[in-house]
Image (tube, rainbow, N blue to C red; front, side, top):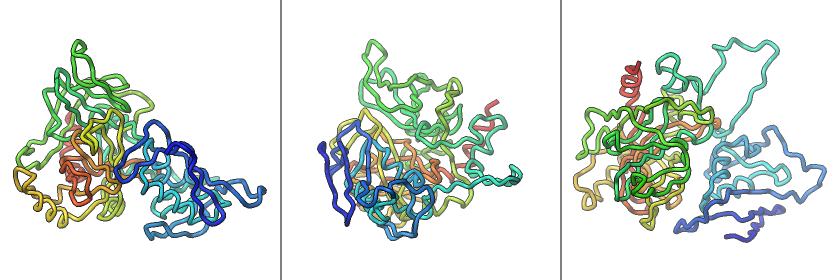
Length: 396
């Protein structure tokens, strides 16, 4: 959809210019960022945007919310910033705008998704009493002096494209930077360290010539693996404990790259509970069986382990052995029609709160079908907090 498209809603017109939209087959036009402009048709004297929260509203999913500028709603802002937008995501944006008065240029944002800023009083409270997002992260328990402590990622610079040198066939995985020294990924992605090449904060990838060593390269500098640590109980047969740490040959010191937060405690349980929407990205195979050379986003819904087990059992013909899902797993189904296919292994299953990204799962496996009946099974990262701490802390 490359021409201007207009959507009539009461007295307001929604204008989208060169907006890439995924249809039901999720065919996307790439390379253009989504722009949603709400044109005012009332008095020009009311053209200034409101910086404060507006009236109470109801989201398209029935949640209570407030009308706020899009910059104050990270969930909607993340969709608006994406290079790809599905028809459902477009409907979500239009519905959010339609729930608020058109002259305000605000969108309806669920209460739990609103980023709220507090003003500093003349006598600010002691620093230790000030709530801080990073205190909800496992990284605060990493060794003293770790640069990731106190830093949370407001973008996806933590994303890591994992390639393998000297391999003629298509092969790739995804990881997440959790500290300047460590990348978290799936154990089944681990190869001989000398064959692995990591690209932190990658966006586009391409195949290298055999004269250059083969494999795939990205649009950022390469990093190499000093040590690969797979979980001691990882089983390729049962797919259990599919988690690994990759220790980089040198620390990531780029000021524009920040690790993703691993949430701890129960603070974030509701954000990632059954029925909630989670996100993932990778450079895997699309629904047409073609590998993508650009970062692809997926929107997934978490389902119960009981429903997941039932659906996995119905797929025993497609799987070599029966898969037993446990509390160590998180199951999701696709919302947009674009699912986590081959090449997304190890990718982050995450959500956004107050503008920061939080890692709750690692993509492990699924069935190559773009159908919300077939679940994607991920590893529940919070179940492995002790294991992560044990191995990160032993590094001098």
